[in-house]
Structures are given as structure tokens and as C-alpha cells.
Length: 294
Image (cartoon, rainbow, N blue to C red; front, side):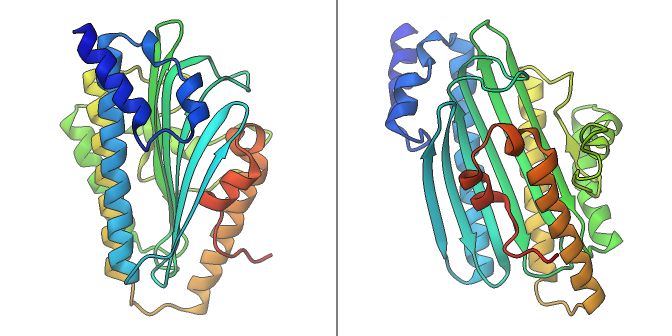
């Protein structure tokens, strides 16, 4: 068993999901237990699946690929960024982050971590932007966390499409016997009283799996989070495809402009990672809208 784990860990270090040679030397993979190593492998497999699902669908929607990539290492994190641009998905950004040491008071020292995030800005104002995050972390004290955030900022989305996203999430909640209400309340609640003015204004049809009571890495929690992520992403891209050629009005465009400005404000003033942890060069590339009007 030990030989198998060591062999697999070596394969991880050689994989493209390490952002740099620095990450290979600073990540403490040998301290993982056999169970943690198995979940780490499943995390990498899931991330690879979602990465392919997203960029393959975007390539089909846009009729080709216009890609921009960036590998960036900071003192605390390594970032692997890829951005697609085109006529249907105007901008779709992905970041894969490895945390090497804590820099904020809400962080702990990790033995192994992956944060995978998609921010998607369709051309049409009839589909809002997607923010879809997924994170797995094992800490040096033996504990773990599993979390994520799934929702849209609605722009001029129809009630029909919002109901569809809600129903797809409800299917996952129902399958695992989970009450979705607290997760949607967390999405709607957002940040603190101090940054409430700037906080993102989502549709509250998905769910937040962050907060004070973060899930630990267990079989049921892992399946819940990964199935919710895939279900929500697939449903969202289905709506983008469905609405790509629908006519829209100046009022719809104004709703999109307001949404994009709100997301910019959230990035600069409210989100704890973009304001305190992630370098501007990284998050501006994968996360910001293609244009913002003031």
C-alpha cells in the first residue's frame, strides 16, 4: 500500500495540475494519509473533467478557441489560469490554485489543496454571469475542508431559466437528503455588514458551501459537492446555448451593465480573497467582465 501511495504521489507531482516547480517542492504531499491521497486523486480527476467539460462546450459555442493562459507564483499560492474569449461566451475564465502557506487569518497551513473556479461572462444579457468555485484542503493538523459556491448574477435572465437552475440544484439536494435552504441563505447573505454595499447580488438559485461550518472531506460530502458542481455547470451552459441568438433590448443591456459593475465592485471591495490574498494580475484576468460601464 505504501508503495502504491508513493508512486501515485509522484504521478501527481508530474501532472499538469501543478502550477510550477515551486509548487512541487513546497506542497507537503508525503504527509497525506492513504484516504486523503485517494481523495486528492479524485479531486484532480474531477477538476480535469470539469476543465474539459467547460472548455469543450465553450469551443463549440464560440466556433473555435481564442485562449489566453498565465502561470503565476506568489509567496503563498500558485495560479494556473486559462481564459477563453469569443462571440457567444464573451469571456470565460478558469483558475486552479494551490495554496502553499497561509497569508490571511482565516487560513490554516495546508498539506494539500486545490481551488478550482470558473467565472463566465456570456455576450447576451439574457444569461447572467456564472461564479462556480470548488475547493478541497487537507491541513497539517489532520483536518480537512470541502466547499464551494455555485450561483449566477442574473442580469436580464428570465424566471424560466432561473427556475431551471434552481430545479437542477434541488435534484442534487434531494438525492443526498440535504436541505438546500441554509446553502441558499448563505449565497444571499454574502459578506459582512461593512462590505454589504459592494457585495455581489446573486440570484440565490444555487448554493454556498462555505461559511463557519465548512464541510469536511467525507464520501457523502465529496459526492454532494462534485455532483452539484457538475449539474449546475451543465445546466448553465445549456441556458447559454439556448439563449445565444434570442433578441434582447436596451433595458436588458442596462441590466447586464449593472451586473458587471456590481461584480467589479465585489472583486475590489468585498471578496476576502481578491482584496487580501490573490494578486490583481491573477484575478483580474480570470474573473473580471470583458467590459464595465460606469
